[in-house]
Image (tube, rainbow, N blue to C red; front, side, top):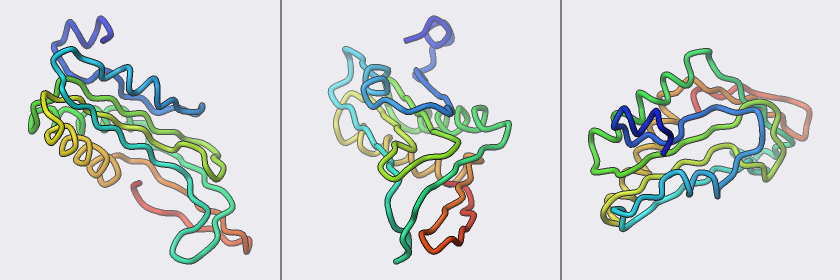
Length: 148
């Protein structure tokens, strides 16, 4: 836990938007806690298709308030579940097929709570955090997709 999160008493250990490759190990380590009996982790990757169309690449962009909005989502998850620690990182910029786009994790006293908190974290991140993706298809067309 960083000194800032320890001093504030918050379970948010990592909340960042990056233009560099993501690390599952970093996110897993961030939520480590001796009082946690369960850790749930979700990894979102760039897939090679969307709605029966072949995807060549993705580019993510974010609003300047993105980290503040991410923290607000994480604060709500922390208020609704008995989390010991939360972590979330999302990538922006140009990504290739197979790249990690988002990694989130929750640690809780029990596994069911960890699964539920992690699911809420990724679902609310996708619905509420101002990140958009531009998909480029193999036929040369592209499309923008709302909050992701």
